[in-house]
Image 1 (tube, each protein chain N blue to C red):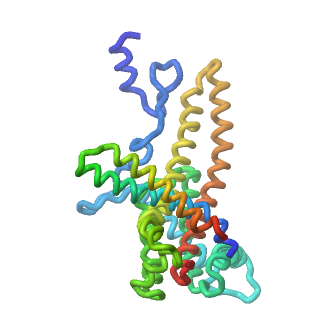
Image 2: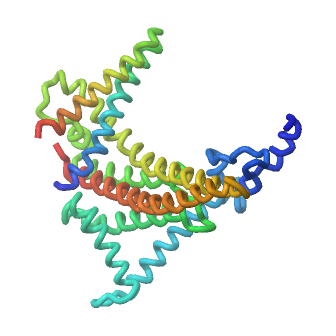
Image 3: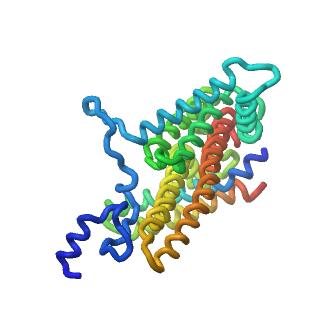
Length: 62
Length: 274
């Protein structure tokens, strides 16, 4: 539908945030218990990558 | 100026009294000073303040307007009914139909109410005396978001089943390894990021707009002194006028975006995308 492409931008934005939130959170959680502070930024970056991947997966192939 | 003279001057520095060369600094707007209001009246521990009053007035305006327009509808619309139909047709043809198709027509009253309530609330930002967008208090957009969030989650679970609703969030036909990486992101995107961004977008835009207008309005008054300050004051005044027009656009745009995203989410709940 026409509206889908119109709002793709907002959805893409949500994916990037969600990716960073989940994998950053995962990194923070593991880092918190294993006392490796670096895991949080690493997780956030990985999450950003996954977010980009999710966007490509959903929109890039059509 | 000595230190205690500065302290004496600072004691008299308010938004209305501060001027250039008066020893007062620029009274910059900000949180919480420009956003928190004292109680208008109090019932027990419940306090009623200006943003709440604005919300009540805005809902009254929306109800009164549509009541006046459609209490006695005529086949050939006249007067206020014309404007009411224009508004409803705009929401139907520009927001509802592109996102949900004809099936979504049952949600027209909800979307119309949402659009006009948010719009009128936002317009209060530039109405004299009111001059405050209640949506710049996070609780107001959050309450609207919870309404939308409840609606589309309920509809999604009702039409697709509880397990099916979550299953449809995840893309189908994906290798298991990729699915394991993508699934948490997809689910988090649906249940957390989506509603949060919906509320924050409206809140942040109105918050920023209110500060933006205050910065230049206060600067106009602060710089209003005999001398070169007059020129700067005039510049600030022109910017205030320009930004007021700009905010008029933002207010309508944010109401439109909130409503169109609501329509998209409800449409997605009725008919899974994947």
